[in-house]
Image (cartoon, rainbow, N blue to C red):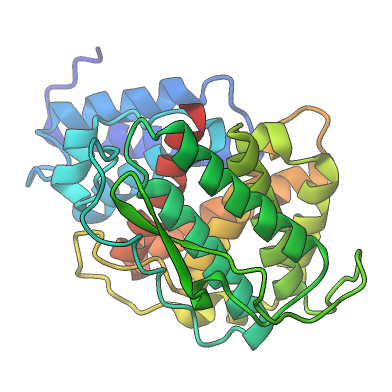
Length: 331
């Protein structure tokens, strides 16, 4: 490892390593990305760890964000150990070893800037993700089939066009390995839309495309990169770019002093991270449209860094949920 006698020199080297990571992420260069993340982790360790007084708070946050964003992009575990991440952020990446005592977690609150159909769709996605992440590990075959059936049902409904009904309004519940799993009801009212209908709102379209990717990944229990097509990378990048920047920036809660992940990942920037993360791994594919692929990577980095500065808890919550989902998809 590098021999750097002065603390300021080590921090300067750490800053350079973080810059390399963010540059790699912005350009989609993944060949040395993990090596740069590992280097940043080792230098931070030489400084005494993420919570060390010898490491500035904002730099420590950027180290963590770079690590989590890299884990999302490469669909791999973070470089930092789960214990180190939990100690600094409050984020637990461990999976449940026994059934939870209560029902599946309540989905995060939805940003108020969203229109009703988009908010309903986002609630469905959060509910599905929370249900998956609440499954005990390993899940029973019956529980796995049930959550995959839910993902398949939601995928079919979202493919048919926008609706105003959410899974969370169901009336039926069944026990799954000791947990209560709300089940979609076939009797729920919903708008009948012609298949292939494209909602004119680009924000709605972006959430819809991301939701479809997550549903397919959960249904097949395969990585997002294996189920997201290049057409979706292009479509999602164009839809996200068509949304005014002040809309994406409109939900930040400016929780800058919070050093834990108690936030729900419910700001507009948190929503943007969730949306982009669905196709980020597929955007590294050499067959991807270069312009749109880089657009996805750059927007992901910009959103993650800005959210780390303005709402640290939200940044950790948004990225952490996707990292945990990838771990579940890997089995």
